[in-house]
Image 1 (tube, rainbow, N blue to C red):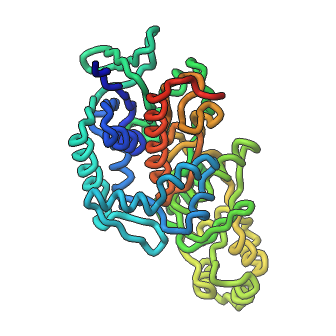
Image 2: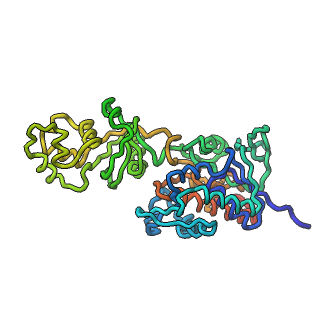
Image 3: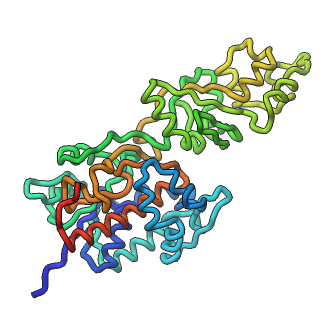
Amino acid sequence: MTLPQPTIAIVGGGPAGLMAAEVLSQNHLRVDVYDSMSSLGRKFLMAGKSGLNLTHAEPFERFVSRYSAREVGTWLKDFTPDDLRAWASELGVETFVGTSGRIFPVGMKASPLLRAWLQRLDQSGVTVHLRHKWMGWDADGSLRFETPEGETLVRADAVILALGGGSWARLGSSGEWVDGLRQAGVQVRDLRPANCGFDVDWSEHFRSRFEGQPIKSVILSFGDFHQQGEFIITKEGVEGSLVYAASARLRDEIESHGRAVLFLDLAPGSTQEKLAAALARPRGSRSMSSHIEKTIGLKGVKVGLLHEFIPKEDFTDPAKLAAAIKRLPVPLVRPRPLDEAISSAGGVTFESVDGHLMLKSLPGVFCAGEMLDWEAPTGGYLLTACFASGRIAARGVMQWLENPSPAKV
């Protein structure tokens, strides 16, 4: 007598869920993917709008150190950045290493990769159910889905939840799953913005004059963080790659002390002593702004920042002005809202899952991707870990189906 084939339900059609579906379907298991949106991979496509940064080429140990949770390192040993590049190549998408070490598809876009991937999943027998919003479980343990035709119940032998974090809700990552898992006895840390911008109390003069302008070639310092790069002045405050790189530290400082102050070196190519000597030259009839531009080349929004944050009298003291240029304090009020963040921190704790990412309180239910409690900077780190976690969860499902015993606490 032939036993019925086990059914695996994957809830969430982003990188983690789709990678889990690939591993399972390649092992000839029946896989159904459920997603609340009208198409799969919406956030993945958005990530590729300005060039899909798949992963990073830095040394592996350095790469792994970028993650807030050591458990992620185990996933990445199983599916390295090199493995990810080989996987993309199998789908017909070649990659290259940019000057920053970031790795992109040759065509820079996400859509060709996603299209080829979905085609392969379809050929492997994966069934996709769109506009199915997960609503938890009913009393018998069936998955509840809200659909355009009404509520649908689904029985599955194993479940992988890959519901994303809490940023970009319009693309499907709403974080609405948090309460449902907590009610089921799962420990979930509050979702918080990661890789996010921050509010600054700009004066109306500064805001109206400099909103949207980039700040280039500066060094941002906060505690032991020191990095050169650029960011953008927004109506509300600051955002951009350099700010995102420091955002976890800045967010945690604000949560602990109510505010954070970052420091900017506006002239990384010069010493404080050289700046002071140049600024001490006679100004003549020039305005102070013209004098600063003429002597040290600083102008526009950088001079605007100086006027915003240092006393007026310091402009007449070359030593104080030079010190401010090399270490300008910029007070931050709060992170921007979670829904605006590139990613989120918090989520299902690692204490709540076993080594295969199965929930200890819900045997047969696994978690993958950003809904777990880890975070990383932008630069390909987020996507790589999501892919890798999907593979770990899928292998956990296969092991559990062979020996369906409760998770070990």
